[in-house]
Length: 385
Image 1 (cartoon, rainbow, N blue to C red):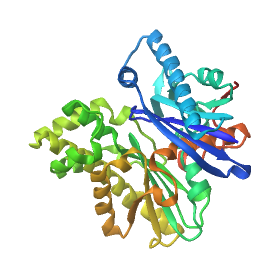
Image 2: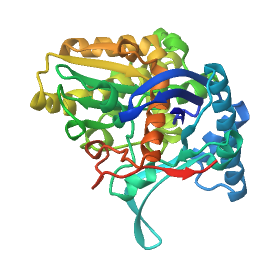
Image 3: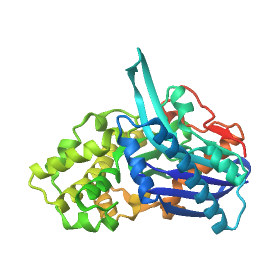
């Protein structure tokens, strides 16, 4: 079955599409993948929706439908590039709001997650079924609704003799730790904190640019270590897994405050970017030391650990160098996930292609050990083409 997996992450930079051939037992082969940027006006609207306390319902509805059309465009282009006809689409959608911890609303505790991008537009354009809205089923079952990629990690990257840590560097960083010989029940997975989100936010505010290309700006600055240490004292980093985060914790307000902290410490613009990059690295290393080290040590020999990085952050040479330096004292070698045969930017698209295939076959798609759900559930909603 030819399945397209569509992902647009918390960085809101664009759309990744992975075209996969998925066979019996969920055997996955990547056929091709593409990435496309949101038009500037669309990205501006998406970021505004993420950060708005209130937004006209008409504007949110229009954005929902506009994104559906863009996702359809992206899948059509990816299928044409791969020379295949897509039979099923798994579309994550654009996360606008994610609140995994309950707060009181209208007299009752409420947890919520919301991804937009109208699936009916994709289904009608391609005339194939579309699976969308993957997170709510896990959330309703008591989970965090995230991370969901561990299903792919276990499926593709589990190893009999080597422990593996799969780190994604999207807007938010998340990792999956799989002990050697372990299955889904042995996985530890959670969001480590900001990956590209704070770096990108600082670049936008200070330089008017979407991101720090290859870490060139950050490389010119110095790391304000006291600022990094102070941020890592915030409650999220010490909270026990399973846990998830997003723009609600590390969006525009956080970035503005972060820049002010760096300014108070005497930082230049380049210092801010270097410090934001160091925050990403130190939060990941801290998470490994604090949670993953012990988990893998309980399950398998620590000497055999592959630490593999995916996502847009894998293209940031400065960030990758800092990660390698940070893990070197632990005897852990950091490498891009290419080493395991998958392009870094394609991974999340492949994950949602697999999850769509599982849903289509009425198989569960969450990993309870990763999300904290009370039970395994079938994810997503099907729109028939």
